[in-house]
Image 1 (cartoon, rainbow, N blue to C red):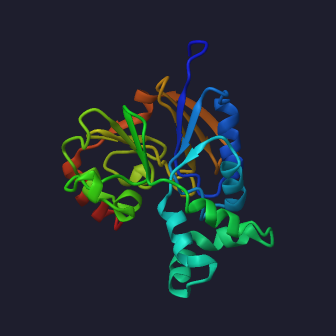
Image 2: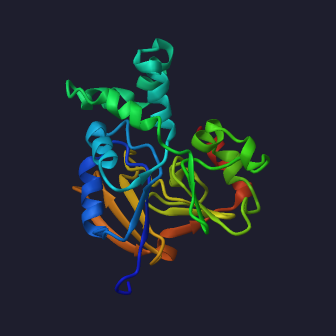
Image 3: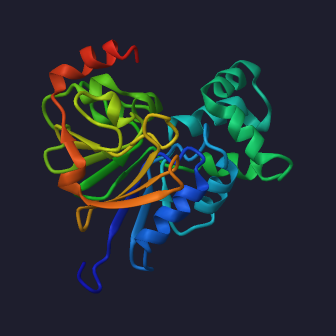
Length: 253
């Protein structure tokens, strides 16, 4: 990296793995001029969601809303428990998040912060979003449902959504896409997916992408936060859009 180059660093779904995140950031060592972006899903399934949220919330970094933050917000509308949504959130990994808060008293502050998070960020040549976009719809007609939840419709598209922007997402664990091994980044038509499944027993890899230098930093939370650094091209597998739906059905996803 050239001295003085401002880096843009994008971090995939952390899912409560605070120690892995800190190991990752220590390796990247962001400078004051670097821009760091989280793609959402800071919480759920991992052991330290409250710590992750507090760290990111009080940092100079940027963060998007993920579907797991949305689930948590729906469980506490107006700060009160809404039982049907609470049960859905707990089923989706929220139990570990509840345990991580204990009696810290910061849950309400975090919910307020989640409400301020954007659904996407347009960086000019890059467009960051948690899940993707619906290729059949204009951008202005899309909602939280598309930006936080979409999968197959986005991954099956055989042409880029933007002619001049690369979309970078998390949300869909990359090994659930055709021919992508655990820990690999997936590349499609106009997009990269960097959610390598930190919480999943089949993977454990938490990924950060230094897009400026085309470098991938990864920590494996199941292997004592073992670190590796790879060139982007070496860490990436191209997928075939026409194979996505059939492949994911075969995995029963």
